[in-house]
Length: 137
Image (cartoon, rainbow, N blue to C red; front, side, top):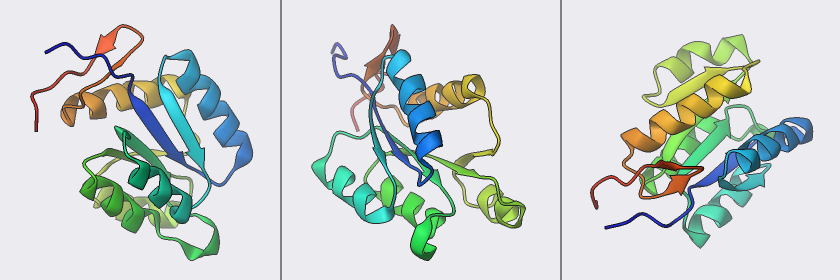
């Protein structure tokens, strides 16, 4: 069965400058994407469906726990990538069972990790000539 859906990335990041940079990068790479700044907005986007992968900042405003949000996203069948720049979170992130990047990170390795997680999760979507059409789940 041909894959026709464009991969959708959900970014949960409270820093507007980082949101802008990631939106530009994902748009350039041919992904559909949604940028949100907190867990409540993430839950709304997940409830609306059609999300393939979620990139989550571990430290969000209001004391929201990015690790717990990652578990919610994974329960929706999404691939997950955690990001943090806070050294005191590194060990927890490494033990989370999710893929991760430490800030500051470069865009090229982030995009490579997104491709890898989409392949691993057997997402049924495509982006800029790359197809992730895994078997139906």
